Image (cartoon, rainbow, N blue to C red; front, side, top):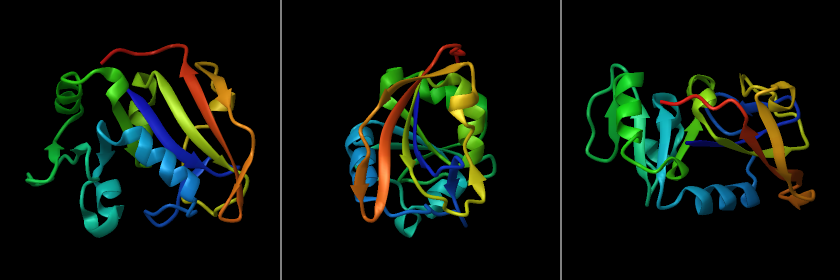
Length: 166
């Protein structure tokens, strides 16, 4: 399993259950990386998607302990149930896409984390762990800076050196 996100200079990832920045290059990378794969999210992330609908051309699994079943995505009620579902897929095809609590809970089980770093501060109210300070993660890729929609971004990848099995 992998995680994918964008973060500001303070590792902020969201504000008011929404993205802080509109970055076309990040959206393109996210879509290209996750299309045809499995995306795992919490219920607030599902609500934040356009019209509260799952992402197209992906298997959407939502951890929602009190959630009602839906026809357009798979609702699981517990972490054990979630792990049971994602074990059905190759780990490289499963992506955690949010929110903050899902990232925090599943980070130890993610072999890689793709972070689009935005050189700005977005006044976030939701944060991701600073992987540069976590000895279990190593920066293995960093792109050259790119300008997109008025922001400077770098695409990065971190490898988990202490991967937990699920």
